[in-house]
Length: 211
Ligand SMILES: [Zn+2]
Ligand SMILES: [Zn+2]
Image (cartoon, rainbow, N blue to C red; front, side):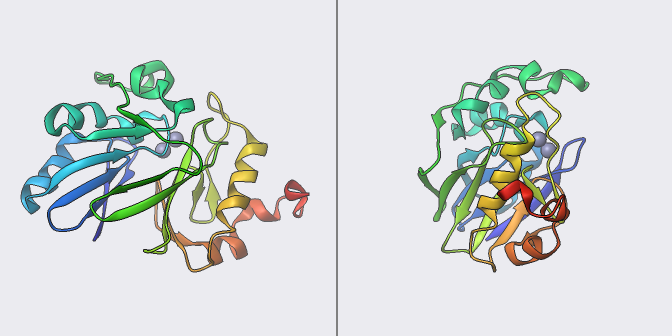
């Protein structure tokens, strides 16, 4: 079962997948908020999957790792964000950033599994260099982080951002089956079919980005 938990100062979506006993969290920015759900439902957190390096997605990872012993996954090109307030942009926010070593790294083509959910890793850079999209074929869903939003895409003006890479990543995500539900890092879920029809970036200068 999938739970959506908006959290943190920027209201980033944390997604919790649970099978009744175990749970995996995608982008937990607030450890306490995740822990209260784990306790309420009596779940054991086994894995934290991070879509990218920004604090509004990973700020809770260190504490969850300390408290539960869960694995913490990130792409190697974004691993600095776990270790440094500067690389995660946490230094722009009030509060203390707790650094964390990634316990595991995933790259394009890898498959990870937790709480009965098997996810394939697509490297989808552009918003950050090590951004990933995590795809479950069986559930027909993908966690897109800040790469694709409902009728939008992530900004590319922050460190390691790259517009051309982002457009290539968008194109790659939209090659998933069209009924795939996309769960973004902020805002409402969408689908491949909806973004293929309505994402404004696809209509920017025609389709020239894909030529
Ligand atoms: Zn971001
Ligand atoms: Zn974000």
